[in-house]
Length: 103
Image 1 (cartoon, rainbow, N blue to C red):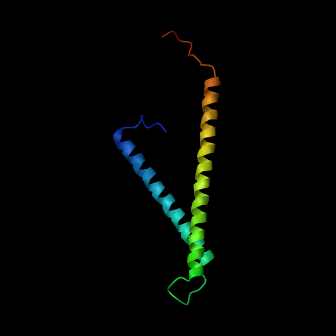
Image 2 (image 1 turned 135 degrees about the vertical axis):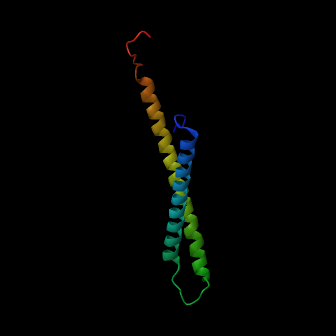
Image 3 (image 1 turned 180 degrees about the vertical axis):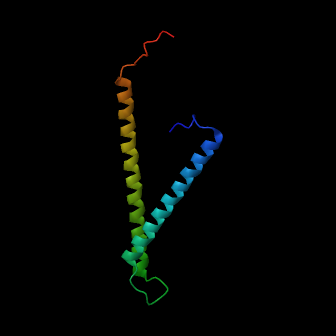
């Protein structure tokens, strides 16, 4: 995205909005990770400590969740790059239109 058309105050405001969105996305991701792994792995509430089986499950769950999200992010990046290339090719293949003016 090209931010050259905005003044410094607008750029700062846009940056702040982007950072807030990134924080919300991170918290949502973290919450989903905790909720999913807790629901899948924790089933013994008789003790404050995790059992070795629960600890192993949590480790595997978080690892799997993180790897899955990493792969989704990579795939999204690949598709985004393909889309950008297609848009560039479409723009290059369009003939330059002149306004018909001499000045």
